[in-house]
Length: 333
Image (tube, rainbow, N blue to C red; front, side, top):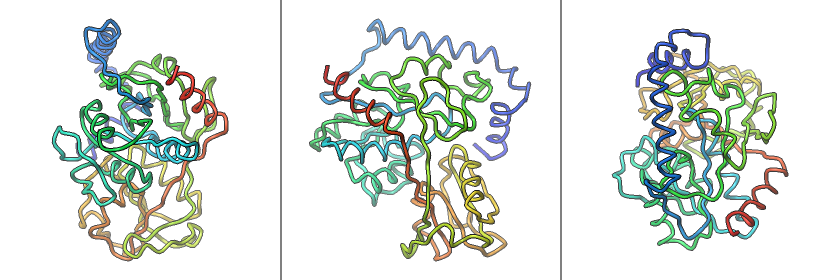
């Protein structure tokens, strides 16, 4: 999807554009289909598969990124600290891998397995398997690794995989846009779906609603793609830079850099954009700062002017304790 079309849809979903109402009949049909599909799973016409270990879904109900991947990374580390052996399954979105599940390593080609999967493998240091069929991906991961809990990065709408815990991540800035389902709005499922999950995490934003737990994503250092050198983000204060982001909400990344005092010219690309060297050839020769997800796709042609910002999620103790309680009581009950 080209940039102009993506921008048009985002404006229609997240700003006052009455043109989106033209799609209302299609949205109503979409919602009916979603509810029918869930009903068929509930009564057993469509089958769910239970895996031999607890399954935690980290997903959202909106199109585009909300901060699921930083939360998954945090959860993997947290569960390791509490004696668990987690594994991660993912769709491998934007990768070209076949329908068969594929194990991912830190050296995997993001064009094949997806940028998020490579990032997860680099950061989590645990087994990662991608596949369109989450059940098959989970089975393969468990057949090759001694994991005792699976975390699915996305997959909230993949009901064939029976889950023990559901976690929804909400973008605290954009929330649910105009509140309508596709194609009239950005929702994959109706808003009431949020009330049916175990934990609701708000990524950023200023106002917590009832039942929401806050998450902050922070980065303090930049890492050079070519040399691995680390510098404090503050070292770039006052230096004119190019900022690049091909994520669900690029404005969040650009605002984060601006808040840190960086003078950046922003360049937004569609989510999961397959970067080539020419994409980063700007007229003004300045340091190029990008997200960690984009860095895995740019490493092969990186120069010493390319830097990325690793992000770490911060969550309250309430989330940590509720997660452990759910895993002990609900998943093993």
